[in-house]
Image (cartoon, rainbow, N blue to C red; front, side, top):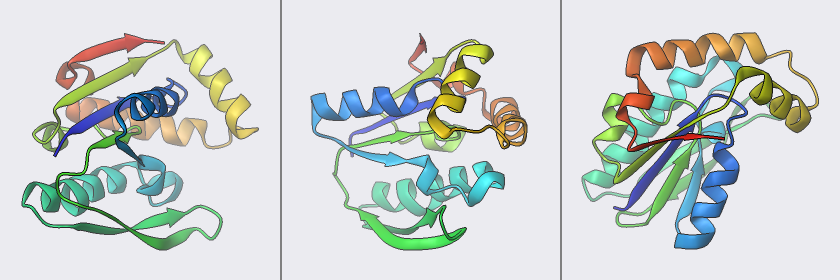
Length: 156
């Protein structure tokens, strides 16, 4: 499996970079937004990536999971990835001690908080979730030190 992980805090530019990398490589992008169990779900998303997607693929099995449906606030459509399929996983919480074992390349994106916050507000139209999500990002960084796990730290 060819796997690239793109992690960083909200508004760092992960989705845009992943889209560019996918266009260049033909890899499929898996978005952590589809793996979080809502606004409280960063850690759940990390575990689903590790146990439900990367571990089966590494064992040569098809990974099958359900995507989070933000409109209904529950798990929605089923998704799957096949062993050997080139993947790019993007989103905060994607680069952990466990996921790094499977990644061929890992990137951590950084930008000043005021820049990231402005990007997130422009993207989402509101920021009621910002502090709740920031606390989960802080916990992810404290537990995994993703910048240290990355092959490259990119300032956006």
